Amino acid sequence: MATNPANTPNPANTPNVPDTQSPQSTPSTPLYRRLARRLQERIDAGAYPAGARLPSEPELSAEFGVNRLTVRQAVAELERAAVVEIRRGVGTFVRPPAVRVSIAVDPRSQRFDLGSVHAALPEAGGEARGEGRRGDGPGDGEFVVAAPPVTGSAEDAEAARQLGRAPQELSRVDSVIRLGGRARAASSYWVPFGPLPAELVRPGRPGNLVLDLARTAGVELEYDWRAFGAVGADLADAELLGVPPGTALLVREGVSCTPDGTPALYVRRRIDGSSARFVLHFRER
Image (tube, rainbow, N blue to C red):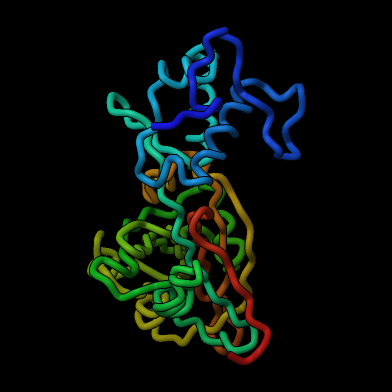
């Protein structure tokens, strides 16, 4: 196999990690970060395709003429960027590109709150354009996780404020939305009534919680407002969504009301930001 200077050991044992063309690269850029970018370039170029195992620490150390600590720091940098996956005792592997889920929000037509499965995730199709969408495969949909008691937490207090009720008047239920074989979003709902039926909040129960809660209350729900933001995944959401703590999550929260304007549901949905985006449509489709 032919070799090139970038792929041959450095016999002089001097760093062989050239600066990349990235505008972020400067002479003061730490060596481990320059090495991480060099490895990123190889991944982007297909030298290490998705699923491939990176060379070992000793191999990279010898190739680039750096110590193993520098290699370890560079690989850790790539892991934080979700480029590679470190499997302890096995090796470091290139992650596949994230499947992006386009979450369509039409501000003119979405008056009625039809719930997570129908409105928050779009219909099937679009993967070829790099915009993965909700399918109807096995295991896809919304599933109850728990019905925790409403206490004095900051989230419970915010729900009470938005619904104009005391915390003890509220009931809460948490769910996860699964798409393409993995968890994509975690949702928490608060409603000003209860107790909720045991079957409705049974862990693992599939359904559409917005519609189910509306039926339980005997009301029709309409959007009042929705807001969008971002947070880092806390320990609970990280475990639920299968992402590292601190992963960027998109947040969609808001209030739904009855037709007379009475607040009847507060929702806070956290979505894996590496695989989703919101799309606002301002023309008829």
